[in-house]
Image 1: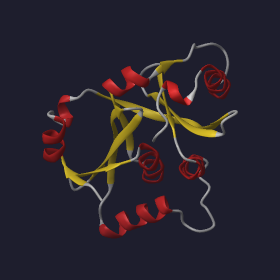
Image 2: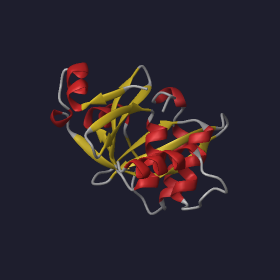
Image 3: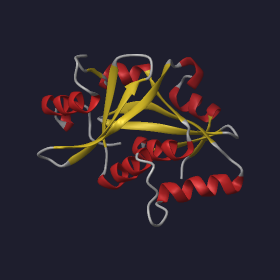
Length: 177
């Protein structure tokens, strides 16, 4: 486990988290790209027009979709267990920060109410954020590098997402989440 405080992250990246501009993101949904059957979670700027696609694993896609549908599984998934352990310890998840994109791999940090930050995959971070109500942020740098604008027409977001999937491949933005 990699456990970091804000000071550790500042030293590791050469800058403070507070210095890096961040954007609040919303989870649009999870879809499977055809023909590769690769799941994607799509985030959208809360106050903007850019979308951030992140290729993820099938297990994490299921966990995110269940949380979005507000359907509890018959037995707790790992993300449900993590949420329950945090609650039992009296620690809250304050935010998820998608902080970097390096060599096609996205990196995120979980920010806890006690000030501790832990590095995590964005897919797991998003699944946990949806279960705890924590806000999701992405650095401006990540959104500039991997974000896309989907033309705004009269279609609903699901149709826009399907059209978007027809125009890209996993190699366009990296696969790991």
